[in-house]
Structures are given as C-alpha cells and as structure tokens.
Length: 178
Image 1 (cartoon, rainbow, N blue to C red):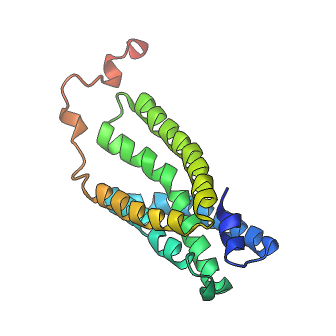
Image 2: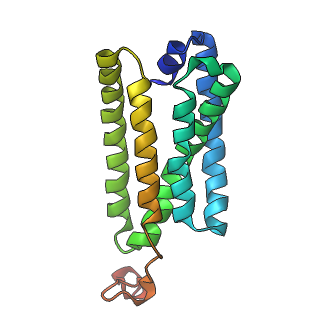
C-alpha cells in the first residue's frame, strides 16, 4: 500500500513508482520459487533469518532520495523477493517446529496473524506519515524490526524429532484407515 507513496516522496514519478512496485511483485514470485529450493538444501531457520534481515538494507536505501532510480530498483527487488519468501517459510517452519498433528490449526493461526499484522501495519504506516510528514521513521522502524526478527529466527534451534513425540496420532491409528 505504501510502496508507491514512499517512492513518490523520494521524488520518483508515480508511473516510475508503479513500475518499481510491479518489479517488486515479480521479485516476490522469484522469492516464492527459490525459497522452496533453498529450504530443501539448507537450514530453513537460516534462510528465514536472512529473508527477515536483508530488507533492512532496502529500507536504508529508501531513506535517501539522492541514491536515485537504480538504487530504488535494487531496494524494491529486495523487498519484493523477501516478501515472497514469507508464506513459504512460515509453512515450512510451522511443519518442522510444530509437527503435523495440529498443523492446520497452527498454520491457520499463523497466517491469520500475518493478515492482521498487514492490516495494522498499513494503518500504522499511514499514521506515521501523517504524524511526521515522511516515511523515514517508518523505514527506521523497519530496519530495527528486521534485525530483531532475523535474530529470533536464529534462536529457533534444531528441529524437534516428531517421530518420538508421545501421544502423536499416527495415520495408521486413524478411524479412516481402519
């Protein structure tokens, strides 16, 4: 919601800002596809930590209009790519850390919280702009929260071994397979 206004506040024309936002969307598709490949090869907590921390670079770049259009392209590609990774990482990490016994309920809560956060975040971003007259405080908050969230992902630790979890329902114990 605020990508185009952030860019126009930097002096970018509305048409260029809309084009940049479309690049972010395309980068998001790449983020979705490549994240699946990466979590199959490397620790998903590390991939999540990077995906949550790297946007800090983009937010920093968007705080200064003097960087110009090429840097704005890089910033929006970073934001788009990492935004595309979020749902895939949430699904994968939920399965790994919470197991599959109650996956639907847990993932439903997780995605609901993401939706609520998106609504609150957009409203808060507008309030920040209305209060301060620019997006710099929002971008500074984004930098700080990117580092905090990335650090939280690093603290997840090893995946639990759900094969030994007590009282975990097994498919063979289901009344549907009897």
